[in-house]
Structures are given as C-alpha cells and as structure tokens.
Length: 92
Image (cartoon, rainbow, N blue to C red; front, side, top):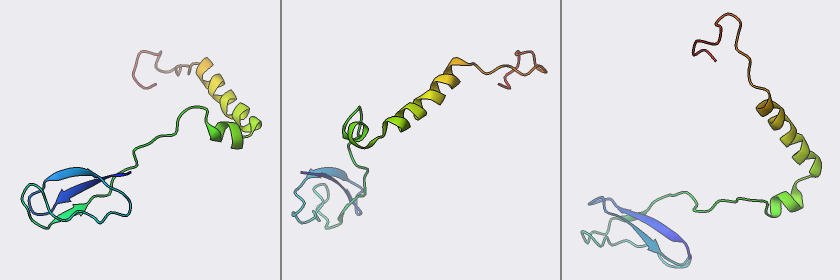
C-alpha cells in the first residue's frame, strides 16, 4: 500500500497516511478539525541499484565495454597544469 502525504490548508499540519489505492482521500485535519486536508505531490520512494534486470537482460555487451573504457582512461591520466601558472594557483 502506498504512503500519501497530506497538508492542511487551514493550520499547516502535515502528515503521512498509509492507504489503499481505492481509498477515498482524507479531508478532515486531525490537528484542527477543518475539512482542508489535501494530498501533496511527493517523489517516489524507491531506487533501482545494482546489476539487476536492466544490466543483464537489455544492456548490450558492447555498450557496457564502450562506456567503461573512457572512464578508466580519464581517471588514469591526471590533467596537466598549464605552463603559464606553474601549478601554484587555483585555476585548475
């Protein structure tokens, strides 16, 4: 069941409610009793991490190798300081 965030327009009270998708939205504020409670738009609470279905089922082997090769080259070769500053300034 999803968790919905609510805010009262009357007193500013905020709360979270665990509700089914088929449940009616809450309208009465538990803090002040006014019928001014409204759902807030919030971000989704999950992240896709690791080597899951996307990396194993849909990603091509050539795109994985091509994406990791430039990252290794850039990390291995440090940026050289410009000759004009002698590497003693904060310009790089």
